[in-house]
Image (cartoon, rainbow, N blue to C red; front, side, top):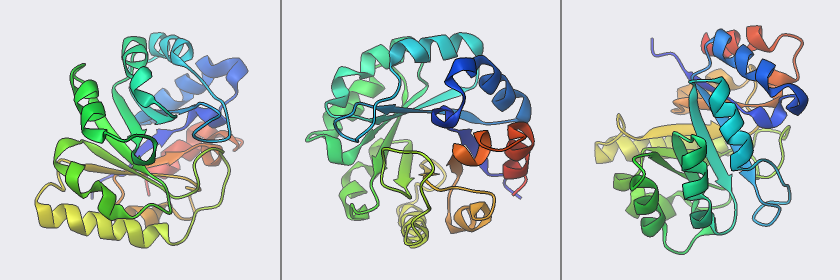
Length: 219
């Protein structure tokens, strides 16, 4: 049985003690740390920048999965690479020339992901599938943590999984799902085709985040 990979989102962690949150993630067997970057423009919230990521990098060797929810992401690629990002995911809705941005990220020898909002048709990804490593399906509207999983997302995950298999690139391209992920729906999302589950409040708002991560891993 293939175990699901877990990417705790530090957006929901205690920002006054990120060191402890990172240590919990690492000791509990989290696969990635998910870093939500919001600019207050592309989405109505403002979060962390490269300086914070650099501090996180100094405290862990976990894979740092950076999700750019920003306008003009090309301006932030180099700063986040220098800060320690391992993967950079951008929103297809935020940019006019995805190929140029993919090439920019690749030039730093980093993994590349594309994220897609719930209302954006999957077909907009078709011409980029051969060029990327990861597709991030947003199962809520991006911008805030703690939202409810949009039920229609399950069918979208299944459809994407099928498309990647038909193209023969399913083993290479990872499907990540972010938004409203909880222990109660994690198995369903995994069975739909997700490889990585991003969870924030479902981990850090519990009494025992360490145990919760372990439970996610054992789904």
